[in-house]
Length: 277
Image (cartoon, rainbow, N blue to C red; front, side, top):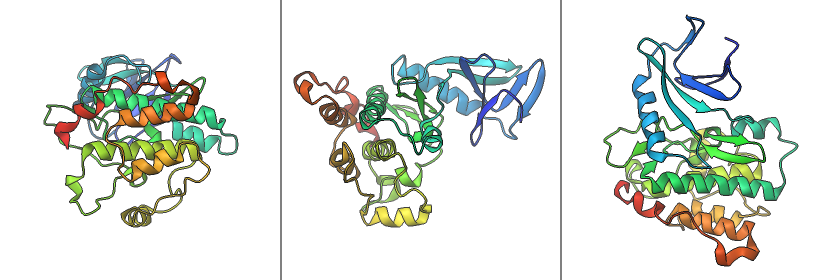
């Protein structure tokens, strides 16, 4: 594998040569030579992701995107900020016996919720939220990224994938495609929060079919002893109407003496996604 590659996804490499930024693309060109390539182009997906980042704008809990770059005639890559500690899931797997404190993990969870609240407020559906698409920075601060599957309000983009089984809202009597987008996103958020707080994924180790069966019966992992456990369970049971509500309740857990000044983003997250329900 070429030395600058620091990660590989289904359709793109992540490479870095400066230790500060990452190029996300399907071909790696360095020194005038193609060093690695996927079989299929993903120019359209990269252009969509660039458009999503532009829509989101700067935010403390969103990866910074510096735009598309032409790395070779007709070949583009997205330049993004480098997360020094990698993605949250890999960090959990690498530090399974030495997790951060519960308060630090709660701050991580709040970061994820703040990021998703902003995403919704900007009229965007992430559509693939999970701890592998959340990125970790010093001080255990978290930023959301990987918007290749996301949708923007008013765009007729076709969804390209579904959430991981551990993050997928059960049908509960609805057709699969009729599940409310807002509730799908909140369910995925709480699966991410569970993964952070429990320091392992929901039903980690079970195969997707077994997880689907358990979720279909509303049988979820125990949250006993977890800070914010009741919030996690409430979201799994579709008791929250917006991510802003989740932010508010997480802040109450993290800052119990500051309830009077607790805020929940800008209050627009719920309404911005109504058109997608």
